[in-house]
Length: 436
Image (cartoon, rainbow, N blue to C red; front, side, top):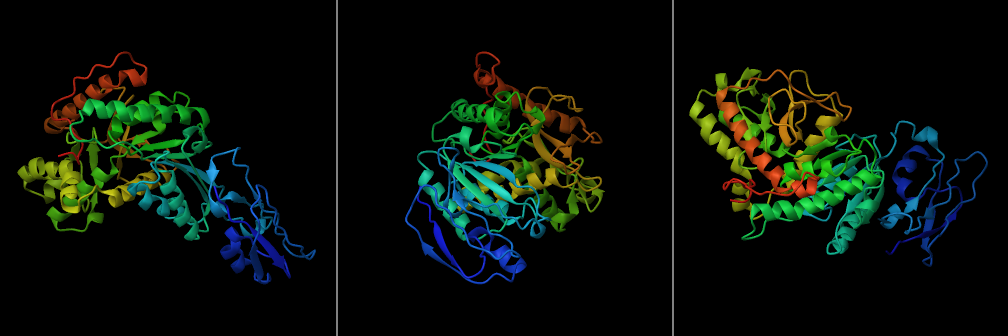
C-alpha cells in the first residue's frame, strides 16, 4: 500500500504530521518546518536536531506491514511523543474494530467514532476496519477520508480482510457486515450464509481480541448472528455480546412523542422485547411520557396495540419505500446510542434496550437465545437487566411469539453453534423490518 513519507528541514524542533494541530497550540515556541517528499522505502526515519531545553520530536518510522494488518497513509507512522506533560489528560488509546467498514452504515459511523462524539473529547481511538477482497479499494477510500479529516483523537487506522489481523487486541467490535436477503432467498438460507460469517468472526475474536471486548452485532438477522458469534467465542463472556435493537427503540420513542404531541426527550423507559424482526414487541405498558405512564397520556389503547406496534415493526420497510435504500444514517446513530448507554451511567429510573444473552433473565424468557430486554448500566461497559417492569397478559403473549421465532432460528443454526444438526422450522411470517 502506498505510504507518503516526508523529510524535514528544521531551524528548530518541529511537529510531526499527526500532532501538528495539537502541538502547534500547546508548544508555540516551535517554528515552521518544511516538508519535502522522500523516495519510498520500507522504513524511513525522520528526526530534527533540538536545543537541550526543547521538547524532542522523536523519530517517525513506518510499521512493517507483515507484522499487522495494513495501516493507511499518515496512520502508518508511529510516534513516541515525549511531551507527556502536554497530553496528560488524554486517556489510553482504545482499539475499535468495525466489520463491513466500506458500507453505508460504517460510512456514517466511523466519523462519529473518530471525532470524539462517542467515547468523549479526550479519548484517543484506533480504528481497525474489516472488509473483503471485493471492498478493499473502497476501504482505502474510507481511510483516505478519515486521513483528510484531521481528527486529533484518531491515532491509528488499519484496514484488512483477515479478521484474525483486524480484531487483534480489539476492545470494541462493531460487526456491521452481512449479506442482504436477495430475491427468492429463504430466511433459512440467510441465517446460514450470514451465520457462517459470524461464526468465523466469533472464532477470530476469541483468538485475538481483548478478553473483555464488547461486541455489538448489527448485521442481520442480528439476534441469531450475535448468538452464533458468542457461541464461537467461549473465552469471551457471553454477557459482552449485544444485538442492535436500539434503532427500534428510537423509532418507538418517535412514534409515542408524535402521538402525545411532545418532543421525544420526554419519552423514557421504552423497551423493545425479542427479535429484530416484525415479531419484535415495542412495550408501551412500561414506557413513560414526561414521567407518566404512556397509557395515562395516550388514551387510545387500540392505537397503542395495533397502529403503534405495527409502525415500529415495519418502519424499516416504509423508509425503504420512500428513500429507496435502507436506514444507514439512523442505524449509525443508534449504534452510537447503544455504545453511549454502556459507557455512561443510565439516568436514574430509566433504561435502554439491547439484545443480550437470555441466561439468568428474571422475565421467564427461554434461556440460550439473544433476546432484546431492558438494561441499565453504571457506565463501565457492563449492564444489568431491569427487574422492576410490569408484564401483563397482552405483553406476555407478544413476548412468547417473538421468543418462539428466536428459538426456531436457534434450531436452524445449530450446526454453527455446536449444538447438533440444524432443523429449520421457521414460522412463515418471519422477516426483517425492511423485507416487506
